[in-house]
Image (cartoon, rainbow, N blue to C red; front, side, top):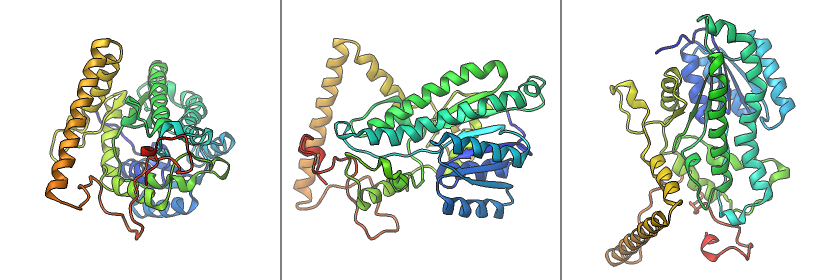
Length: 359
C-alpha cells in the first residue's frame, strides 16, 4: 500500500540530524509539511535551511523533549502553524552512553531514560488525544490517515553489561509502542516501532547535550571514546534509506520494523524489512534461561566462543608479533583525537573490576 503524503503534517523529534533528518527529507520530499524539533538551535537552523533548499515546507522548533511544558508549547506552535496536529508523529530523538552496569549512577539512568523513554511517553500523551480528536472520524470515513512511529533499537531485545540504561529504555519504548498499537487500532491509527542496529548519525556525541544537573556519571567518557563511537556510527545505515524502510513498514501496518541491511536497489520492497536473526537469538536465550538444560547449552556455547577467541589471539600474536589485532572500527572521523575504547568505568571507581576500567 502507498499513502498520499501531500499536504499531510509530520512532527519529528531529533529532526535536526541523523535518523530524524533522514525522515524529514524522505517524507518532506513526498509532500508532507514537516516540523523538526531538537535541543540544538544551530543544528535546527542548518537542517531547516537544507530542507527548504530541497523544496520542503519545514518548521524548526528548539525544544527539550523531557520538559513537558516546552513540549506542549512546541506542539501548540506547530499545530497553529500548520492548522492541525500531525498525521505522522515520529518519536526519533535518542541518546546513549556506555559503561559497566555496576558503575551506573542515578544520573546515567535519569538522563538516558528521560530522553529515550520519557520523551516518547510525552509524545504519546501530548499528541494522541489531539490526533484522535482531529482525525479519527475522517480516518473511519477513509478520508485521511494517521500513524505514530518510534525509533528504538535492536538493543530492545536484549540486555548487555555495558549499556543497561540504554537497553532498558529501548525495551520499555518497544513495550509502550506495542501497547499503543493495540489501543489505537479501533481509531484506525497505526503504530510502528523501528529497531535498527546502527545508523550513520551523530548519536555518539549525545553526551555533549547532557544537562548540567545530570553530569555525574560512572562511565569513562572522553573525546577519544566519542571518536570511537563516531567511527562505529559512520558505518551505519544511511538515514534516508532507513526512513524508506520505516515508510514501508508503516504503510503495511507492521508493528515492528527491523531494517534490512542487505537490501539493494532493485530488490522487491518487501526485502526492506526482515525477521532478524539477532532478535531470534535473544528470544532463544530467554527461553534457555528458563531451564537447567538451557543454561548448560549457554555455558557450552560461551566456552566454545572463549576458546575460539583465545585461539585467534594466539595465532595473531604468532603471525604479527608486536601488532594489535585488527579492529572492526574505522579510523577517527574528522578528528585528530585518537580512538579510546568506550563502555568502561571511571578509573576512580575502586569497586569496579579492573577489566572494566582499562582505557
